[in-house]
Image (cartoon, rainbow, N blue to C red; front, side):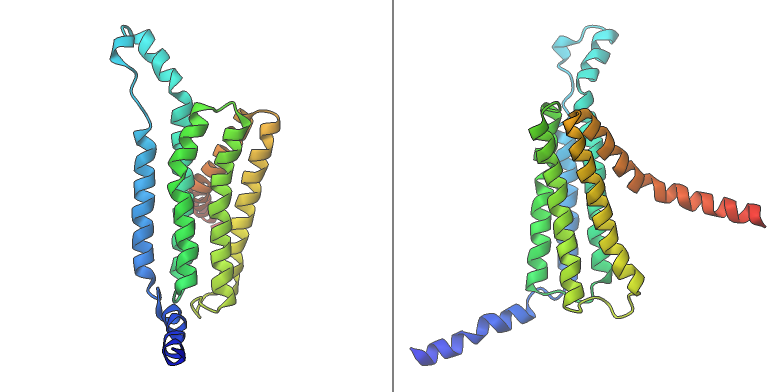
Length: 226
């Protein structure tokens, strides 16, 4: 019995060292999970019942009722896009993976699959603080896991050797700044949940649109200086 145990005990350690080193499979799984979550978001948008619409006015009024759902769809789609970009950016700079890193990212993807639920909850109960805080928690959790992922690969020297120091710091800083802004938005629910939704949506639009506006301004500034 002791001989069998001595033969079997080293195996988990060896397996843990060789498991999940290829990040391509993790990236492919991530793409599928994000695509599925984004698709589920739009499936929660339901057309007005035809029997209840008999005029243009009634149709627009019915569409107005869908307003919260449309806003939440936009906000959550932006959320998923931002997190997908964040994860893919990290994976681009990680040289190799391991079992622990794979489980960190699987936990991250688990939080992503919950986004359609928290989105629908907030759309249905947009004036309830508890619904807003649950939605914010669904933003906080993946952010913390992305931060943990980057700290893990940094600590274990799993980052590509040609990665400049400023990029290592920038990835951490972006997560911290974004989560601080989201927490600020969540705190605004003390005033009203609509304030929180508006602030979080503004933050997301900034991350999605501002970089493009900045790139457009830079060539104009360069041309004027010439």
